[in-house]
Image (tube, rainbow, N blue to C red; front, side, top):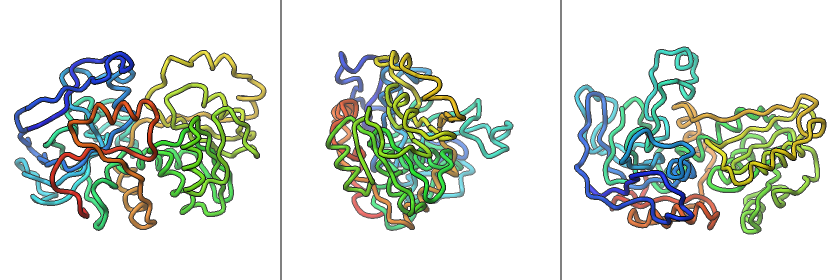
Length: 349
C-alpha cells in the first residue's frame, strides 16, 4: 500500500519534506479489529507537533494521521460491530485501557495507557489502517467524507473545549486563532448559544475576515483589546502570546481553555509579561484540553449533522502531504486541510 511515513523528528523550517512516500505491506486486522480502506484523512496541527518533537512518536517509522474516514475492508476475528463496506471514522483516541479510574469515570482521554492514532500506532496517511472496532465511529448518513474528517479531531476537540469553558447562553466567548478547530466552534456556539457573542483574535487579516463571514461579532489582532470583557476564551494556537493576551481580556471569574497538545518555544518569553493582578487574580481559571473521548467524537458528529455544521476544506492528494503540512505550519489558507487517498469517498458517507 502507499503511505507517507515519518522516520525521525525534525525542524520543518529546515526540513520542508519530513514525510517520505513508501510502499508498505497492507496491514492485517487482529482480533476485534477492523481493516479500513482510507478515503480521506485530515491534516492536523498535532502532526506538526509530532514531526517537530513536541509530542514525539515513541518509535519510528510511523504513519501519521488521526482524522480518518474510510470504509471497512475486512474484519478481524471476533469483530462484529461493523460489516465490510460500512463507512467509519477513526479519531485521535485509538485505544484506552477501559479499567482505570479515568476510564471508569468517563474520562478515558486521561487514561495513562491512552494510545494515539498516527503517533503511537500507524495512522491514516496511507491507503489502509487498522483500528479496534470499539474505537471506530459510525458516521451520520449524508455527510461528505472530506467534511467528516476534520470533525473527528478539530470538531471533537472544539466540542470538548466548549464544554470545559462552561459557557452559558448570553455569555461572551473569545477564540484565539481561527483555524480548523475554531472555525467549527463558531457555528457550534451560534447553534447552541444563540444569544452569545463570539470575539475572534487572529494574526491574519484573512482569518479575521473569515471569522466575520461566519458570524463572529468582532475580530481583531492577537494583541487587541476586546470591546468587552469576556466570560471565556478558547485558545487554539501553538503559541504563548495568545495565552497572555487572552487572560487580559477575561472578566473576573473568567475561564481560559487551552486547546493545544503543546506550545512552541519561540515566544515563551511572552509569559514574562504576565501581570498577576490584571491577568490571574480575581479567580480567573485556566484549563487545558487533553485528547478526546469517544463520546466527544460521537456527540459532535451528531450535533454537526443535526445543525448543518460543515467545515471549509481544501483537499490535497496523499503524495502532497508535505505541502499540506507546510501550508498549515505557515497559517496559509482557511478552514481545514484533508488528504484525498482513496478513489471512493467523493460522495456521501
